Length: 363
Picture 1 (cartoon, rainbow, N blue to C red):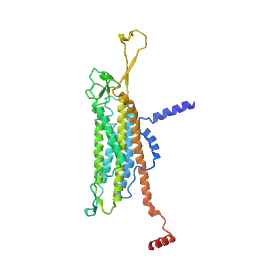
Picture 2 (picture 1 turned 180 degrees about the vertical axis):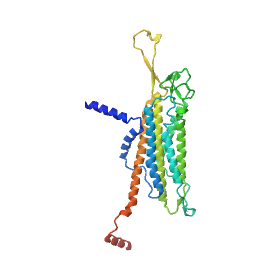
Picture 3 (picture 1 turned 30 degrees about the vertical axis):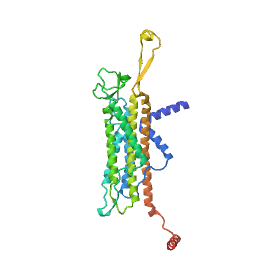
């Protein structure tokens, strides 16, 4: 086989097996690139049951969210033609709903941990719920949430019902009174894919994720502290908890935002060609002269294509964050295990070392 044909065939096979529409494809690429910075996203506290909870959250929670996103991406890729005008209403926010559930379960497990007796509690200031959150990831999370609300809110507001005799383009549903269409061709045509039936679940998912995250972090920041635990250990525990939860939400938010952008961009990135034959143009209807063709598109076609492709990139970044979170949690758990075994497996000091130590203490 010709090497060029072999390369083209291989690339086509790879595209069929790992389509860009599935977040995991670009996620693996971005995950590999992320190792330019080897600093881990999270660390684990040195002791207590909290480390085990965070290990489960960081590894299995991240992989579970990524599995949900991969499944929903695959369903959208395999069955792209909608029959109702709002078939993907639950697929797009599914990763964010899964993240809310996982964080809620993790917070409930932490809440059930035994509290120190009232006489053994240290006096601690009443902290804000964001006291232990990492600043930059938190701001990025807030920005992604704002972009998701703005996009779905705008695409909800442009949703209208199409008249029975209206021009409807693309794979359109049966006649319905639901506002699942948006206008194109200057109001002379309608395309399915907008309105609250498509985006209400996403808006609810954003609100639910915000409430769950704030309540989980507030519960942890207000939790009583034992007087036998140092302030540094307390901050380390709660910072680790906040980082794991914030990165779980951030990855899920980017997966959902990317899915919404890809969907909204795809819906608006289309055009309809029209042939205009008029007497003023001097073109006879029976003439064989070349007919001018005019392409008319949606009201946001100017940026729909960029939004469509950016959606795949955002999904890939979200998948990479979750892959990196799971990997770094494994690294942190192994480091914690080695540190715990270190003193027990170290060799006893020699006679000369003990004599040197005694001399140093008596000086």
